[in-house]
Structures are given as structure tokens and as C-alpha cells.
Image 1 (cartoon, helix red, strand yellow):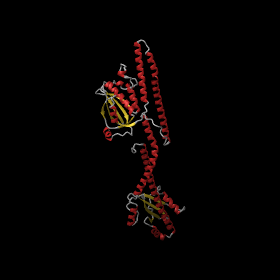
Image 2 (cartoon, rainbow, N blue to C red):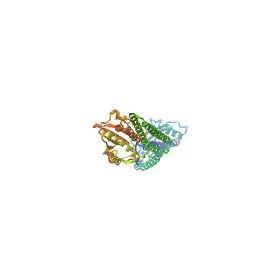
Image 3 (cartoon, rainbow, N blue to C red):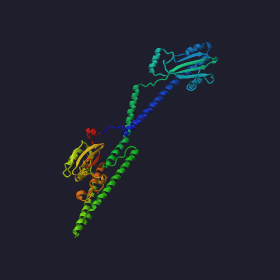
Image 4 (cartoon, rainbow, N blue to C red):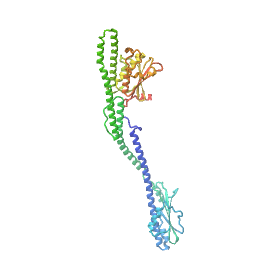
Length: 473
């Protein structure tokens, strides 16, 4: 049993679905990381805005001489406050920082109408994570953030009574995705194994009936019509299986009916031909009597040949895997149809031995009759077994290479059964070979003579020697 191929429907669907899921997971992870970063940044911004609003209330409610103390007490490593006669934010960011301004106004109350300016910007090269942080804490912070920080600076200027401004400065980092590599790999591997197992089961349910259908179609093409296939799988595959079963039944019945009619006609001709021969014997004129008897004998022979042809079409011999060298050597040893065996590689093929034996015999008999002898060899050509029957005769006119396969077609002009036969040998041989799913081709040889090539498709369960296959390819 061979493993799954990358070109199979199952493998391609699994790869396609896994690829789509991997892309979807990557996009989701990126969106999750970005949303998480935005959430953390918003939280830090709101915290700084809340502290700024509280400091504004204190400054405006406390005596002016306490303002400096309030600002010093409000300072921290994360947020720095400063009182100045001019705002530090000269170009406020009215788009990205609007939510900070809204937050501050909400905390200060509806009655606060003075100017609030906010500016957000990302630092290009963050050398120090947080202003006024000790080196030890900065190092710990960088290790925790794994050195992948992108700082965002927020500047806030709030107008106070008396014309002064409270300037607020803070910096916070875009946090990296805190997901260790081992956890990421474990998650990816576990998800992949589960998905592959589930998809493999689903694809097997889909491709299993398709594979059985392909095998049954191949057997039908070889003339080995089997039992109806079991209906299984999705609705579309079930409908396809039912259609194939109906087609197989109709084709088998059609061929059987036509063959039965042909055989019946040939068989029923025997009785009137026998009666005609008996009546011909009663004719007194000797010349007329002999002419009638000869014509009746010819008709009798043609009827027998037609019956043989019908039997060849209706053959129900079971196919089997045979060793081709041994099979051809046995056939060559038959004294009725001797021929020279030129040899070939060791290989096996699934055939109907008795039927194919008859086809090869017919070709050998033609080669012996018209070419003075026959030589048989075999080889592999792609996925076909090729059996070649050659002779050294005069060959066949090119325009007749296909016509000779027609029933009762004879090249020999004398119409003598002793020299020309009755013209069914090649027709029977081609019918048998086509019943194997193959064909017969005739070709005139450059060195003289005719070559008849029998092509038989090699079944998957017919092994071929590996060295031979490498040599052929």
C-alpha cells in the first residue's frame, strides 16, 4: 500500500485548509497583540491623565505658596509635573490624543473650559525606557520587556488660573507579546496534530469512495466489471457512485445483449446451412452440385468464425497477475503455434491468460502465414506492457494498416480459406486486447516485415522489477 501523495486530493485539501488556518491564526495573533498594546497604552495614558486632573484641582484649591510642594509631591518616575508660564505643547495632536483630553475634562468637571493640549508621539530610538528611573530599575525593566520596547511619549499642558500652565510629561512603552517560544511551539504543534487528525478523517471519508470509484472504472475498462460499489461519503460522491453503478450495469447488459444476439444468429445459421447442403447433394449436375457445396461450406465456415468471434467478446475469464516471461515461454513451447522468443525484462501484469493467449496466437499465425515466421518480445513503455510480434514478410500497404482489423476483411485476393483465412483473426485479437483496456497497433518495419504491438495497461497491483523500471525510465 502506497502512502499519500502530495498530488492527491486528500493531501492538497489538508495543506490548503492548514495553510488557511495558519494565516488566519497569524492575523488574529497580530490583531490581538496590537489591541493588547493599545489597551495597555490607553490604560497608562488614562492613569497619567487622572493624576494630572487631581494635581490641577489641588493647585487651584490650595494656597499659591503650596503649589511648588504639590508639584514636587506629585512627581514620580513615571510622570513628571512642572509649573511654567508657557505650555510645553505648542502643536497639540487633535486626532490620536482626543481621548486623553476628553478624559481630563470629564475628571475636572463640566465647568472646566480652559485650554487642554495633548500630544502623543513615538520615540524613534528609545535609549532609556522611563525618565528619572534608576539604572538598576531600568535594567530590570529592559530585561522584563526583552529589549523590544517602543516608547510612546505623552505631553499634556493644562491652563490654570492666573495664566500659568501645568505641564505633564510621561513615557510608556509598547509592551511586547509575552509569549515564550516554547509555549508558542507547543501550541502550534498541538493544534496542527489535532487539525491534521480531524481533516485526515474527513478527507478519508471523501477520498476513499473516490479511490474505489477510480479503481472500479479502471477494472471496467479492462473488462472486469465487478459488483456495484457501496454508496458512501458526501451526497455528491454518493450521487456519483450511483451514476457509475447504473452506467456499469447498462454497459454490461448492452455488450452482453449484442454479443448474445451475434452468437445466436451464428448458431441458428447452422440448421438452414445443413439443410441446404443436404439439398445440394441431391442436385444431379456435378458441376452445379460442387459449386453449391463449396459456397455452403464457405458460409458454414464464416458462421463458425462469427460464433468464435462472439465467444471472444463474451469471454468471462477472471483476470490474474502472471509472470510474463514464464507465460510467454509456455506459449512459445506450444507446437501448434511455434515462434522465436526474443526476450524482455522481468515483469508481471494482470491479464486474462486464456483470452490473451488466443490474441497472441492469432498474431503469430498471421506472421507465420504471411511473413514466414514470428518472433515475440516484450518490454515496458510508460504504464503499459508491450508485446511485439514481428515477421520478415512483405508487410501491409499503409492504407490497410487499420482496415485489416475489420471483421471478414482479407488482404489475400484469392478468397481461398486455405491461403487467406476468413478475416476474423485480427478482429478477434483486437477485441480481446481492448477488453484488457489496451489496443493493437500495426507498423511496417524499416528493415522489412510487419510489427504488431499489443499494449496492455499495467495494473497497480501488478509489481514491476525496480531495476527494470529504472532502466526503462
